[in-house]
Amino acid sequence: MALSVPSTEAHEAPATTGFWALTLGSIGVVFGDIGTSPLYAFREAVGAAAHGQPVSRVIVLGVLSLILWSLFIVVTAKYVLLLLRADNNGEGGTLSLMALGQRALGRRSWPLLALGVVGASMFIGDSMITPAISVLSAVEGLKLAAPALEHYVVPLTVFILVVLFSVQSSGTARVATAFGPVMMVWFATLAVLGLVHISDDPSVLAAINPWYAVEFMLSHGTIGLVTLGAVFLAVTGGEALYADLGHFGRKPIQAGWFYFVLPALLINYFGQGALVLAHPVAIENSFYRMVPEMLLIPMVVLATAATVIASQAVITGAYSLVRQAVQLGLLPRFEVRYTSETHAGQIYLPRVNRLLLIGVLLLVLLFRTSSNLASAYGIAVSTTMVVDGIMGFVVIWKLWNWRAATAAALIVPFVVVDSTFFAANLLKLLEGAWVPLLFGFAMAVMIWTWRRGAAILVLKTRRIEVPLDDLIKSLEKRPPHIVKGTAVFLTSDPSFVPTALLHNLKHNKVLHEHNVILTIETAQTPRVDVAERVRMEKISDKFSTVRLRFGFMESPNVPKALVIARKLGWQFDIMSTSFFVSRRSLKPSPQSGMPQWQDHLFIALSRSANDATDYFQIPTGRVVEVGTQVII
Image (cartoon, rainbow, N blue to C red):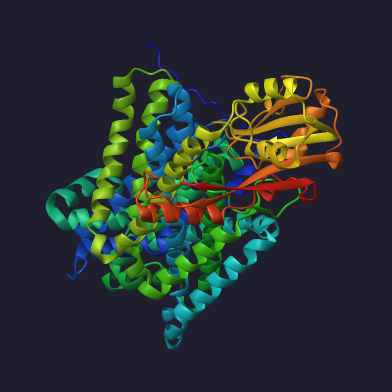
């Protein structure tokens, strides 16, 4: 059987944008998290391996070999070479992979949905830890540059993070243009520092031999597994390569990794290893000990800039993921603000921004040092990587049409490696790993509650709803008073009469000349072609149904979509059209099918949802809201 590894990318890269410009952009956005790992990863891994004892050559070479081969296997082989090909119409990330797997199966799979929810929830946990540990580790360089400023590390970190989250509302387009050049300088600096210090002990290059990693794990027992949890810090951010696929395309990301990022990281880690072999006390802060004393302050500034960029990429990634979750019906509607008139992907979610800031500040104030925070890092990312591997198997098997045994032979080794890292990080549960698990669990409970509550709500309302065909026949026999104009009724199921239409007939006793039953659907693809956006059907003289389809990466804009409907023959003037929207007031019921606490949580989530008028970008002056009370 001939095996093929297709790429379903719909837009590898815009033709008008240069390949190297996209590569530079990917270096500025995609690699920020993994690119700032040298600040703390090697130091923490060697510290865990030494376990309070003097640092030996066996430890340094073993840890360094583990880091190098983790970068080769987890990041390079799994993400850069394999999963970047498993794109959903050009988009990547956990939820895109989930949607792709469900499309491959041809049905909605609850196990895949559960995996997607777990992966997405853990990504949110990671979105809180990355800014905290990255900025904190960079600012800690002040301890070496000016020991008297040690007490200002935490306050300065808090200040930087508050400023970072405060500027999100104004958009990041201008700042983003500088991301690429700044990160190029950062990676070049990493490489130069490494090259300078490899000469301290050139024998460090022997760590490229994987036997040092194997021997270390075999001879160190539980300490080896604890060390592996710290080694994982070097590959956190690898999942971002996949999540940012849609922004830059596969080939620019691959080029950025192989030509710039991977070489710089390897050289820097070799340099840190050689420095510690020659001067074991340097392990106190092996990164900043590589920097000449006169350049420490500029290096702290550059490292802080790099960590801010890494944090920015994670924050915007969280915005994008939450918007996808809303579109897929996993969360209530959150307010989305657009910070660019030309780039639809540049968005700002005020509520998500506030929650992230609160979480990040709590982490900084609770742990206070990057070493303490390192214990909390890793568990979220390793969970996401395990999830990506399992869902990747479904895509390779079903979508790429590989034999199940062949697909398993390819993906199982990656899942085993990721699961080993997950187990290693679990050992840090009481030291801080509980924090991202708590964040992830809270997020998963919200998603589960929203899905379950929404399903119960549909069942409750379905019992009192009237089939649309029956209503039309009834109105033809006994027509009410007809008024001029067009009325658009929003509903999730066009086969039943929208609640707003029933109330309009019951209380106002009128029917509009033209009535449109409007349904907005979310596709299992990131974007929907304009030709597939609108589907219209005339079902009587006075009634028509219109279906608008949007991808889960798109923001639903009803007025723009209705312009397409006009081209298809629906003659209307939006300024003389009334949009009727139902607003439900929910009350808890002892017979709801959910525990009382979940009833109250679902109602709270429902009340916090953004107004449908704003979310679908309907002109507020044309909207009529009809309130109904539902006991769930």
